[in-house]
Image 1 (tube, rainbow, N blue to C red):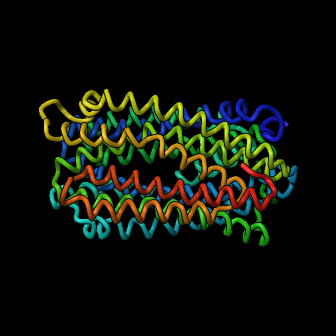
Image 2 (image 1 turned 60 degrees about the vertical axis):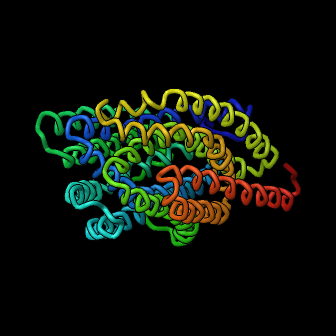
Image 3 (image 1 turned 135 degrees about the vertical axis):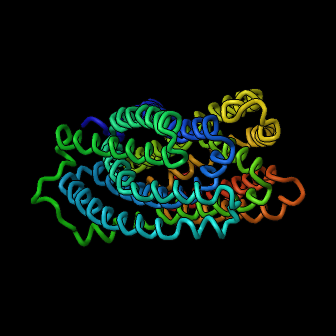
Length: 444
């Protein structure tokens, strides 16, 4: 069947499946980066800083929902790989109903708490109102984010990573156009950027739903097929809560690190917002490859093809290393030009802070690649507690060292803290990986 990853060359399958997701993640980062560039260029550094402090808070809500979709995608992939197509459709229904209910509750809670979280993280008063408005609009459209990620995850679970990319590209272009119109022409301020994002997400989710209902009967639900399977609900919760908690811990940690940066003032906040967008952009292919490894491993886990899982793991590490080295060189030598995209040349201090950060962080990019491959492997075989524990260890180290080092070396402390966190994560997951496959009577 098309989308089956249990046969054929692992390298070819992983790369072919990952390319659309890599492009999708690049467009997703363009989504955010375009907003930052437009806001920074046409409103100013205060507006850029307000979006910057809002971003990690926004990400907690969005990536909690995304974590739920990751968990359900693993279960769907395993059912698909095992050829249990009726159970797969019941899982789609169960996860969709539960996810919609949970997302609506999450959306309301996030809207109510957004300003309070901004205050306790030390957001400067001059950007507090704009950041709060931005967050409330984004959280109001959280249901669209869930629907797009849910149906994208379902399509990827059955081996289709191209279709979600097409809809994401449409959404990204629409977001850029609307953001420019609302911010530059209509002068809606920071709120215009948020409104553009919500509209674009709504369009992408609608396109996914229409496509599934027209083209994909395997996961298309008729009215009578909307039901909650209690046994699958338990498994869905078991898979989803761990991946959702993992994503939440990661972005709570990033929010706490934002609290380290905020006291350094608007220039540091604006620079940090810019460089974290760059980090997200250049590291997103690693996230995509992790998702490719997860789907590949899950399908082969369902088919009980352990040797293929190990082979895929080894090939993935070679590919991600080559990518990480290449992109590190680009960022290191192009740091100044990259920073000039976000702010005017006259903002010399913002540019200098950002350049120092980018050149230091680029040295450690390869560590992130190794972490991603481990994460994809363990998600695919259903060992989500290992990915959660590794993330908690990594993000705890990042937060603690950022606070300890910040008084001495400024926001460069974040670079060292992140790198040490990645090293700890790799050490732990490497140990657990050998143990897992040894217990399965396979040695890496």
